[in-house]
Length: 189
Image 1 (spheres, rainbow, N blue to C red):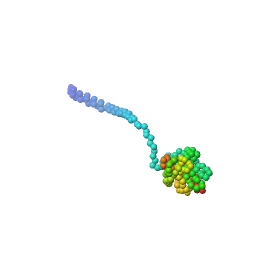
Image 2: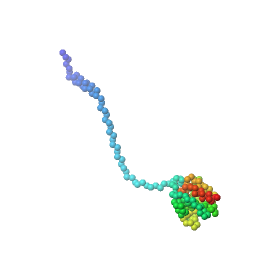
Image 3: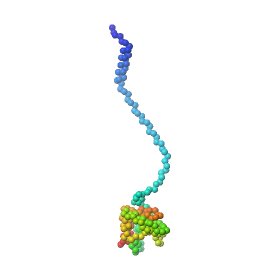
Image 4: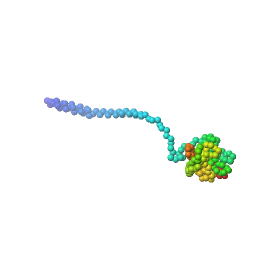
């Protein structure tokens, strides 16, 4: 005779069998995470750019004034002219040798009712000269130096440029070109 199975044992055997089948099934892969969408940036209205005039801690950092040097010899004088043209009327700066007096004049385009200060800035020297309106020539403020003045050497051998500042006139930054040395040497020989 066969033992009689109880329904409880038969149900338990069925559950154990089902669990054994489930244990053989590999786990389902985890779903790939979906990145959240990139937020759209909020564009804020901007003010138009402001124009800023640069300031320079060092005068040597300022841009060079537009123009070029020209040398010319005339009766009794030689001149180095700096400007956008080739005539004295176009020059914003003139360095002139008076061959009779052996004096060098530095003249800057501009006018004044009385004497003004003219500051010459070089790599090795800064000097303030007294400048006045030239007799017979309107539109230029000039200072005179002896041809042997060390300021002329400082101008001629300045590292690339020098500056001329005159009260009431925009500062100019000009290159130290050979035309200047030639005028100075004309006065010294």
